[in-house]
Length: 270
Image (cartoon, rainbow, N blue to C red; front, side, top):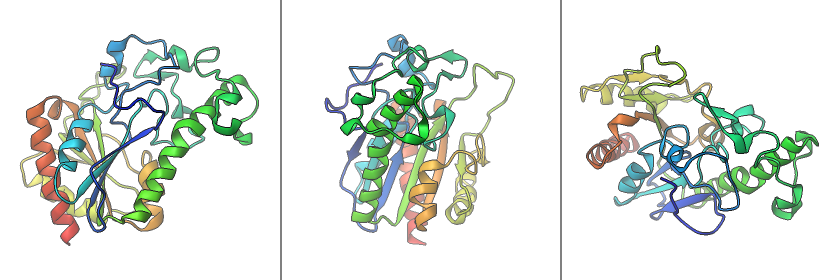
């Protein structure tokens, strides 16, 4: 599974038409593409695994965006290229390893050693230093991370939604930590703004689901996109992590798209 959504270098894909007062689904890790000029040193099959993408979220986002009043803004490239939901100075922004799998192209002397001239306008972040891996990291920031967040910020200004759904998925088990149980079917994540999370958790639990409150991750640790575009701006949002076996196939994807659409509409209406 290598994926090929568009042929240009745009690091996002916009599905549907954003509406003022509507719902915008944001899925940072939905894509699995790798630019044709980049080799991460992994077999193609790896890009169908959880280390490279949030499995199922692209399909759920597409199904939700097919509904009136909903659009989706999704990351096109694999998070192994650049993790869009990380701070610019986070070490794992360009991961050298994921769940026990080495990413050769992200190691020094790999694809990360791009030349500064490869960045748009030769742009580099001086705070990242002069080492080859720092230069390559600056190229990834300039080529993927910053354009993605600049476009999302503009989109939210152009058509302010009533609610942002931050959509992610998590693997039922980590290969590197098989002893850690992950029984939740869905997790709700938030940082300081838990207004919608507190309403969503009991609504999801009422459907008979095992719901994680800040599980399997905490939104106080992993919430960069929503911290920047929602919490910092006072925009209402809901952070959701669906267990990947729930949305690995069309049936589950359709069921969760309908469930989340109904939930978001109910929360947006107040």
